[in-house]
Amino acid sequence: MPTSAPPSNRFERRRAETRRALIHAARQILAETGDTSASIQAIAERADVGFGSFYNHFESKTELFEAAVVDALEEFGQNFDERLAGIDDPAELVAAGFRLSARMADSHPELMQVLRRRGLGHIHSDNGLARRALRDLEAGLTSGRFTPVDPAVALSALGGTLLSLVELRFARPDVDGDEAAVNLAEMVLRMLGVPPDDAHEVARRPLPDLASPATPVRGTTSPAGE
Image (cartoon, rainbow, N blue to C red; front, side, top):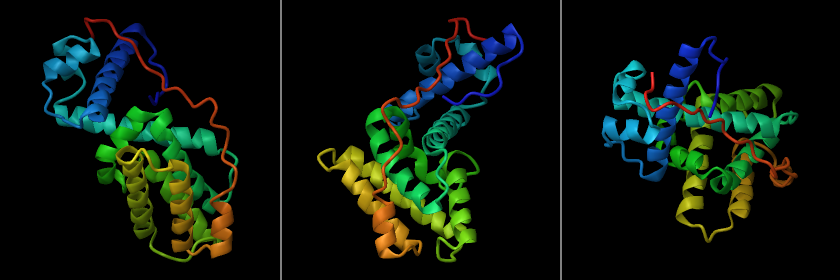
């Protein structure tokens, strides 16, 4: 789970741990069923914090579940940052993003289920993967790698295609996820104006080493909470 600068004292650390535990519990619920009707009591019990602690951090369940989605999408983006560091070609970044997403359905199922269930409403958000995808699109447009187009429109196309790929990975586990991701990546690159032969080659470049995927950092909390 994404982390910020460590709190400076014990009280702040306990508050941060409690908040992380609540967000983690909400992420689990979203990944398992997508049902946000669970009671605050049930969420607090899953997080192993006191019921009263909830309102020290969130005004409502809606706010909590929104924070959980943002947290998951930021972790998704951070994972990409780690894996794709050093790649300068915007086309390769787009293609590798699709292919890594297909594999993360196996390596990070909770994270990808949250994306599957709630990602559509965050395609144009200012954080998570959307911010990074827009950055890469704008770099490709500025450099001439991609055909001029409204970046927001291009982001809609990329986001919708990515969510469709994630849905395919969970709904049709019999389909070869890697092959589907490569083919979709090639199609997207051609849509962005990359010449066919170039798009074919870029979509099949070797991926970064995935042997040791980044492990989310989880906080622990005392039953009393803060």
